View 1: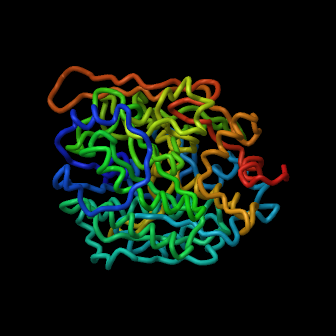
View 2: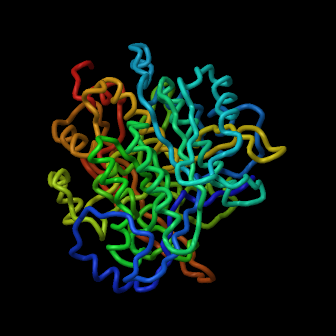
View 3: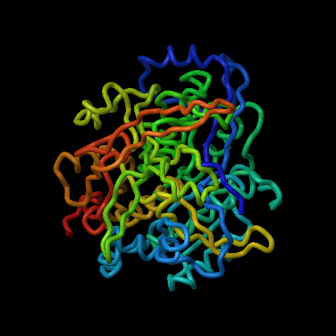
Length: 478
């Protein structure tokens, strides 16, 4: 089985990192338009890498149960019905709140050649209805033919499968719009602008209410604040058109990848676009099952020996909810109430959902010839489409005359009111350790603890959707 990298990410390879860090100390969020390259910084290579964390092991012909995973490997795994229960979704479904009339746009490079049939198999297994519509569009150009031997394409196919299946599983009445882009890595910054152009097409034509993104780049890997901000136009447009945009906060805890895409920073960093003020950052939790009930703790599998045995390494490796303080964007006004935590910076994440590898989810795929079946996947690439589904339910409750748009101010206002739909997560942290290259000394980046109220590992916590959906929609109904 392919071992995908820990997250779909855009890594901007650039020099001048030291100058960049100095330049952004006092930077604030500004609007910008897309440019094809930053002439001041010179040519920059932007690599868009797929990478929901796909656990190694045999592809199975039926989804695994929690008991099977626990007995076989010492870690938990879940089927989508368990996530529905954990987030109290059946009560909403009983009230016919399923996302009906709403559309979730999922943005991925290349997509998967078998995604429509794979979703149909997924639905048959769990007894779910097909989405009202499932469209695939390619507004940024023709998608090249799928090559199963191309690890990049295979990785994006896995990401696409996870995104589509779990957005649909939690919002079964919502339509799915898969937005595929044809480039994963090119010279200049044409890789990410194609994603920007595709998202702007969706926004301009009113094709979706919520956009789910499972990719990001360490802020320090961009050549300058301007080079990053020149890629913000889709998020600025989404805010103007009242479209909600979500992004994964990353899977490497308080660190993230350097520009070589294999080493980690040895100090705290965070990533973009989840750090963008017009984007809601989705972090990760671990669901802990007790009978038919579930509680949440901060996701951190860095030191989990059972997981690493499954992964095939005894060394600690960063697998934890991304979170930290931006060095590009200043603290937005809606985070003023949590300034003791974020200080003068935009803090991420904002909210968290299930993402732990010790609690991975069952995904069905057949894009690899001769390898059709079920596998286990985890990471904030899982959490983001899950939360996209929750937001789609809230859009249905709010109605077409009350689009939600940028939901961050509402989230923090709900937290200030101690809204019952927000469930505080107070256990765990995103400290990580790793060996770098040929070094024999263990590196540790001390992250942040989950705590009462807002924190830089789970944000405002997670959700009880039976209440949260109404709260986010601004409707009394719980």
